Length: 487
Ligand code: NAD
Image 1 (cartoon, rainbow, N blue to C red):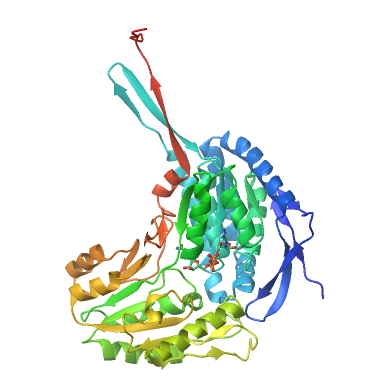
Image 2: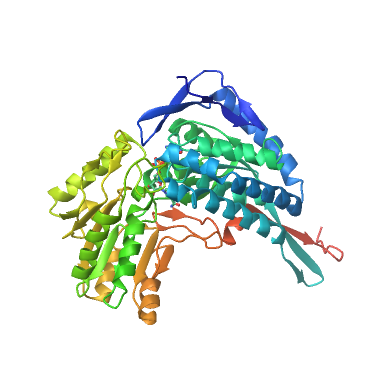
């Protein structure tokens, strides 16, 4: 059977490349090639820039209300097509249908809706300075590039295009080469909604295409989601033309469970924050620090629920709640971290092996894995694994656990479980992380800014401030009296 070949999406339509080079995309749950995608060669790259220039001219000339109205149409189409788009995400990523069906499209649509609503309310300022005055305009940046990771492909495309387009910019988006279809679907939806051709373009390929985007002097900003190491390369390359950057990078986030916490709730949070999307979530609480007084209770319940309640298998089966990892290579990497954990002396509470479920025997599954007897300096406690692997550690002193939680170059997220409201806020205020939860974990509504401290990121996505990151301020001084000149 022949599989479809998708071209790059430029200037409102699919455009064939000249080299004929393509790459294959596999379904992680079956190990089968499901389609091919043409790589953005030089012809496509040049066309993308020309297209975005024209798109920017048309789009930035429209009023914010006009742009908002069109984006809201795109939001409605996204919601109407929820199931079709969710299926694309399941086949590309291997994540469970039961997640994609209610999260991926929904949270992407929410963010576009949020920024479509905000854009017409964005205002400049004016101020008298003596008899003269100045005023400011919030102007779009121009052409912005988005580069996405593979864990939430459509959602990432929406989170980057929502504020960029609402503010009047044009976008060239490069999805991950593992999951390229969601962004194409979004491009088609924008056109159907009435977004002018050229405003949202999709270029396809791996690192080389990303490098071209980050180095291109016609592009004013890069918003990147991916690994810390790649983020550093992106930022260094963007510096060549002094591009603005937003960096949404990796994490190794702590969850602190105090002895007055509702332990069952804390176990729920720990499981969500390690096993949802088979552990491939940047904000995951992969270091769980549990107070010694509730440690045994915590790990007993965690073991029971992990062994009894997790169903791995064909991700399209609505009962399945643990999907396949993105690739064979990534599965091997996650398993190698598990081996390292054992070698370095951690104890497996549960899991630890590759899985071959009957309904998806060739998929890249890994058992939900929990390590106990972990020490702060173990590799599994220090490095982002990006799979269903949790490390549990014990503490008995508040100040000490805060210091241990902060002892990392990463700072994406953190959480605290306690019923003592003063302790909850006191502790959270000391944790060095950009996204924090109290008696909750993982929620990320469109209204709430998200982004990392330390090497987990620069800038924010979502929330009001993000709109500012897609505009630049022009100051205009107005003289109201004669100029006093010595010349
Ligand atoms: P990755 O860094 O390997 O790739 C991300 C993107 O960058 C891909 O599109 C890739 O093609 C592109 N790329 C690779 N090399 C490049 C280069 N030199 N120049 C420009 N682009 C380049 O990341 P990944 O494996 O796709 O995603 C997993 C990582 O993403 C994890 O570390 C995870 O924590 C992080 N992540 C962060 C967030 C967040 O919001 N903070 C969200 C999701 C994922």
